[in-house]
Image (cartoon, rainbow, N blue to C red; front, side):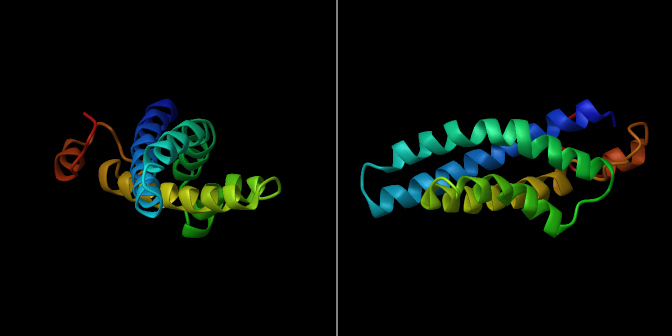
Length: 136
């Protein structure tokens, strides 16, 4: 699979994982303080979308492409923006750390489930039929 094909598929999975994170954060904020859920949901999507598309998806795709994905590396690329944000504001950085690690885990699990191995031969019909896929 070409790098750009794999990159846009990982970006779709990362945005879907970000939506799940935003719903969880918004639900928790709405539970703790009624009325704050929609604000947190919108902020999470607005702040997380550039990071998911421009930082996480390309880094994860490079690791996946070179078959170097480990849980340590995966969580490192998810947590790094939050660790940097902690220098400016600790609470915001902590939220980025939690959201980034959740985004990393959900994206990786989705990629394992729906994208298969990074080195799959796109012409192997038997492998393609055997694996469930989101993308045709």
